[in-house]
Each structure stands twice: as C-alpha cells, then as structure tokens.
Length: 443
Ligand SMILES: *[C@@H]1O[C@H](CO)[C@@H](O)[C@H](O)[C@H]1NC(C)=O
Ligand SMILES: *[C@@H]1O[C@H](CO)[C@@H](O)[C@H](O)[C@H]1NC(C)=O
Ligand SMILES: *[C@@H]1O[C@H](CO)[C@@H](O)[C@H](O)[C@H]1NC(C)=O
Ligand SMILES: [Ca+2]
Ligand SMILES: [Ca+2]
Image (tube, rainbow, N blue to C red; front, side, top):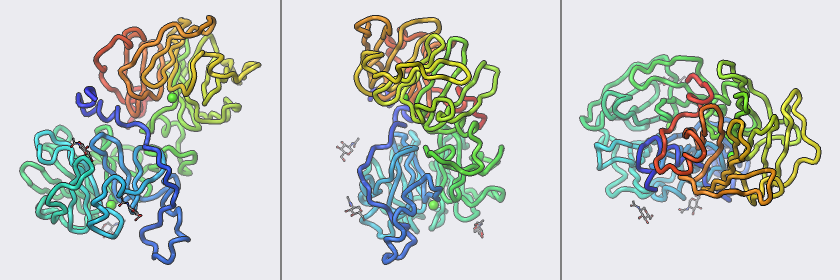
C-alpha cells in the first residue's frame, strides 16, 4: 500500500488487476424494457462482448475502470457484471431508474474537497462518492456544483492540468461540449462537430475516448481533434472477448488493447511472443512488424488462454492450469512427446503460475507465483534453488531479453537489469505502457 500512493501511473497499474469475481448469475434486464417483458430481455445487456452502449465509464479512486450500464457495472476490462448498488449503495436509494447519465473521477490534488471523488450525474442531479459512500449534502443540483453545466448530460470526463490548460471536466450533451475549469468555475463551449455525440467518455493512460454505441473515437481533450482511423470497436481494445467486431484488425487490436496480457516470452535471438486470450503476437527482430495468430492455429493442444510461457533452448514451455506443454520452435511448432506434463514434475512448484522467464543464454528458470519469485533448475532435484519476495502484488506476465527483465501488470510494464536486481530492489521503476512502448501501438 505504501507504493500505491507514489504516483498516479503506478496506482493505475497496480490497481488494474482482475475484476472482482462475482458469483452473481442473475441476468440483468435492459432498462428500456417494460417490466412485464423482463424475461425476454434477460441477458440483453449483460454480456459486454455482444457489443453494448455503456451509460457511463469512470475510473475508481484506485484506478480500476468501471463501466456502467443500467443498474449494473463491470469492474476492469474483463469479468462479469455486478449490481451497481453493491458498490454505490446510496445511488439506489435516491432514484429508481436504475442507471446514471454520466460519471467521472475527480483526481485533482489541488482540490482537496473533491480529490478522488467519483461524480455521477442523473437528470438534474449530481452525486459525489468518496470511499464508496455518498458525501453529505448530496445529491445536489448540477447547477449548484457545476454552474453553467446543463441537466440530462450524456457524458463527462476529467481532464487534469497539463492535458487541459487547468484542472477541468469535459461534459457532453448531444452535440454540445463544455469545458469546465474546476478552480475558476469557468465554462467554455466547444464546437466539435466532427466528433460523434458521446454517450460516455473515458480517460485512460492519458488518452481521451468518446464512446458512442459500442464504438469509440479517440479525441484531443483541448482541440477535439481526431487523428487516425476512428471509430473503432470498443470490444477490440477495452474488453476481453473471444469474438470481436467483424472488421477487427487482429494485429492492431492485440497491439493496442488495454486488457492485460496472459504471458510473454523472448527467445535468445530476440523473437518475442505475447499471448492474450485466444491470440498471440510474434515479432522476429526489433525492426520487424508484429504478426498476429490464433493460439489454436500454432499450438493446437493448448487452444487458448495460457498462464505463462518461457523460452529455453529452442523450445517454448507453455503453462496452462496444472500442465506444461513443451513445443519445439519451428514451422510448425510441434508438441514434444510425453507432454503435457504436470507443473509439479517439470518445475517443482504447486499451483497457478503467474509468469515465468529465462534470461538470454542462461539456464535458470524464474517463476512468479503471487508475490514469490522462484529460481528453478529444470535438470536438478529438487528444482527450486532460491525463493525471494517481489515488490508486486499480482503479476500478469514477465520476460527477460536483451533489455533485461520486464514485469507486466495491467496496462503497464516495469524494467530491471536482471532478476537479481529486481529481487533486491526497494523502489518501483518507472511504469511504461505495454501497448505503446512494448507492442508498438501507435495510438
Ligand atoms: C441492489 O438492487 C437489487 C435489485 O434491484 C436488490 O435486490 C438488492 O437488494 C439491492 N442491494 C442493496 C445492497 O441495496
Ligand atoms: C472507507 O470505508 C470503510 C467502510 O465502508 C472504512 O472502514 C474505511 O476506514 C474508509 N476509509 C477511508 C479512507 O475513509
Ligand atoms: C447529436 O445531438 C444533437 C442534439 O444536440 C441531435 O440533434 C443529433 O441528431 C445527434 N446526432 C446523432 C447522430 O445522434
Ligand atoms: Ca451516458
Ligand atoms: Ca500470466
């Protein structure tokens, strides 16, 4: 927790973990559906991979993205929906419509009164939550808290100083856009006719996204300029789905997705493989382009969704659940006879493996399980040589290549010169973005 407060970036990265699993299985009803029609609409908006329009999107104070639809919300980029009133109880008590119009998180340290508060908008009222509790005196009229901002908003997103000229909130209603400066309460209207009407808006990794339907358009928060090919399908970049939009570009999607990777590995010659869900990316040299494939097509015994992968002596050790699949690298990759074997037999550890890597031309396998790092010799019994504690809560993937060790967590990665330096380090290194700085996404 000490580390969490260091920087916003770090905070985002650490918190961008799994959505809290929910055993809630009741299907949610489309909020437009008349009550008697309830049954027919079961599941209508429950599955975000079907392509739905969110009511609002906002990061929580811990930096976890919350996606709102009707009386449900999704926490993080994957996982099932849960009832919003489980997290924001009072929202339910004050209205019966079961949805919000817009939401954002204020993250302005200069404004202690509102810092890290999550604001929800419904009709002409605004709700301010701190620590998942409605602040005293709320709900208030929007005009009382944000004078000059109209009722019945469509979307809202924070824009801190540095990205906007002062700590601001951008509000959207129909095709009207309002820039609201928090300290001065100054309101400026913008003409962004080229931007679709946003039904929700979201700031992530210092980029700004206008969501409309199940698509989104990235825009510049000051000028509203849209550069690049938009709109794109939200399922490709902000959700973990097994099927995607029809015109999905698999390579670009896997490069630019904000969803965590399952595994990554670097071979001795510098070839990198990055795995997510049913797909993987491969790049042969640092100047080459990334290519995308399905896991099924290259590693058919594995199908999809690996836990960890490491490269060693022209083989890929691919770990899924309790098993290790050993593939000889080549065209095609072939499963070595006698595999899969159990993780216990090959590595000498029990339970789920979060990440594993071998550094270039070395023989020690480094395995991460929770906050533990094991140094493992595949050829000796017992396999485990050393066990150390890591400064990470939950690691998604790790690799060791030309640039040393990279630990991947959520949308970010952290670099160390070597596993030994990582195990000894007390400070978190700079958080860098997986999509932009590792996988070559250009937006
Ligand atoms: C949340 O809403 C559901 C459905 O409307 C209701 O059954 C449940 O009791 C509510 N939970 C809380 C904590 O208010
Ligand atoms: C947040 O609320 C919980 C109870 O809902 C309480 O135990 C905790 O102390 C609160 N934290 C802060 C920082 O106010
Ligand atoms: C956008 O909002 C305006 C109202 O401000 C409305 O007239 C227009 O039809 C909307 N456009 C679309 C494509 O929904
Ligand atoms: Ca909305
Ligand atoms: Ca993993």
